[in-house]
Amino acid sequence: MRLTFFALVLAVIASAYSCADPTQVGAGLLEEDRADVGFSDTLSIVSSTVANDSIRTYSPFSSSQLGTYLLGNLNDPVFGRSSSSIYAQVYPQSSSPGFGAATVVDSIILVLPYNVDGLYGKTEGEEFGIDVFQLAEVLQENEEYFSSQEAAVEAMPVGSARAMVSTDSLAFTDYDDTDTVAARFPHYRITLDDAVASYLVGLESNIYADDSLFLDAFKGIHLRPTTENEGMLSFRLLSQDAGIYLYYRDSINGKPKRFLYDFDIEPTVRFTNFKHDYDGAPVNDFLDGATEDSIIFIQGMSGVSARLEIPNVANLRGLVVNKAELEFYVADVGGDEAAFTPCPQLILTTPDDEDLQVVVEDISIILSQRRNLAEVFGGTPIEGTSGSPALYRMNISAHFQDIIDGNRKNVLFITPLQKAETASRTILYGASHPQYGIRLKLAFTKL
Image (cartoon, rainbow, N blue to C red; front, side, top):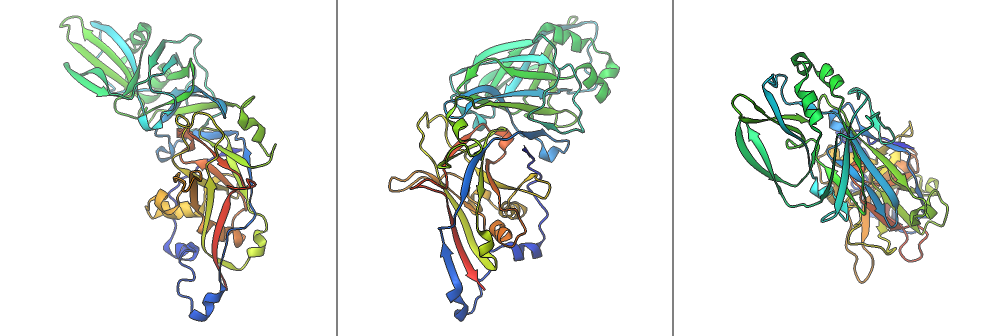
């Protein structure tokens, strides 16, 4: 199943919202009508865990492009092995670099700023290895790229590194014109082969002056993890600090300079490739309804999702939903809970008429009104009380009304927010769990 999270900010007209917002319906009922207001939390729910095929990790539309990029070989004690590699073009900071016969290269370094909040699992103080390859094919700016896709690369790496991850700000020497500047930010640094620098310096000036000529001459880089870890890295490629730094000097005056090739949002392409191997992992026993759904699994990247269906919805036809809220408890299956924390924000999606995954109506309404998703929809972990597990609550009032009215398919998927940008995962008790099963709390009015 190919998932597409199309633009979350949808044009929702005010009149449609007033009809679709069930939290407002019934607020002005006459006193004699209030006897028909009811509540239920015993509706049947069917839940399961399903594997995904691929998700989009690059779009020609800048508003739909990723903000951060994952990299690593993650060995998860419950979810098995997941890998993420990066394909990316770079672009010169200027169309007139000013290289000449007197240019002497000092070094060339790839700088990858961390997205500290996106690091997942065991990363701090762990050693991660990365190889850098040059692309052997041109990426197309006007095409979509999905997480199952790969691009051709040259046979030999042009840079390799193994480094301990630290979220502390690391010193970084840069230049403002010819003045030395000391910068500090958390990052991973890889020294590239001098041959790459020599090649870039030797390009004709007309190549730098033309987008397509440069991207054909230097097609980009591929970042591939070389170590297996119990964590996943996350990089801010679009940071002003990210890119390939070419340090050089003029042999005549000897003054040091720097030229940057960065990951501009335009006209470059950047996408991630995900792979998942569940063989031998506990999650494998729960895929596609292989066992009872007492536990369900949710994972970032192109990993597994939880599928929900609510039978007998036809029996609710004619009801007006005042509020519908799903409640899920976080499952305790052992393992290192301190490292593999639950997803900070879960959302619900549903298939549209073309079987593409779109967010539920409640999320569309919230985002169109620029309201806080966590406060209005929920989907964030809440600490349990009186010894009960942590839980998630999700408000699906508008969407459940659409299901009852026959305007939406009776299928929901639980997935992390910004799935392609997170390696986080969550394990929940499923609908058939005897103590902490999924509940749909429904307040309604029967007209």
